[in-house]
Image (cartoon, rainbow, N blue to C red):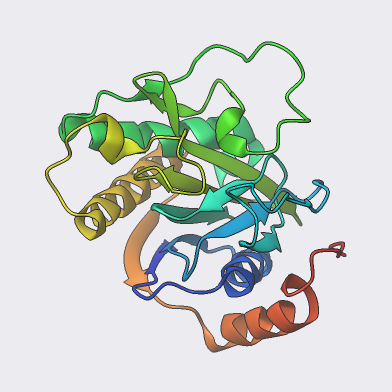
Length: 255
């Protein structure tokens, strides 16, 4: 039986560490064949740039001026990590959804929608494509993708991917409430009454996403079981090296 390890970081971390851990997990999964899901938060409001985005220069009066900025391994628009949960899902090349990247978006987001709906927040997949070229739109939550999760017309979950050695990393943001640095982007709690606290919501989402990916694997004759786990010693060491050598800088390129 193959394993699905669910890692829940109870303490928030800095942006460089968070991104280094996600890349370390991608490298690890590419070699072990294990599946990993991680949930985490950020110590301070931080912007994660998409891999191909140019580092910004904000005017002094811009609400984003002065925030910490980190470049992430995946593409897409920048994300402001403030009042939110971030997740990462890493699948080995052998997993059926690693060969169907758009289906992985749908599986993870649909599991989250089930949780939101059970709590009285009628979210849905966007469904329609955005009109026009969005590459010059800086923030991810102003972009539109058919697989986004929307509530009352507002994007509340967005995700991006990166592949390596056949393995796939998908990570994304679950927006809980608007930030003072982006007041025009309401979150789940601004749009609906959810009668559980943030940590309980995270745990429900973690369980739902794990269960959905296990169900998907069994549909394709793969046998996974999931358990709560932590980073391995090798993963911690890899993350420390990546943090020091790469993620403290904005201008870097992955090998």
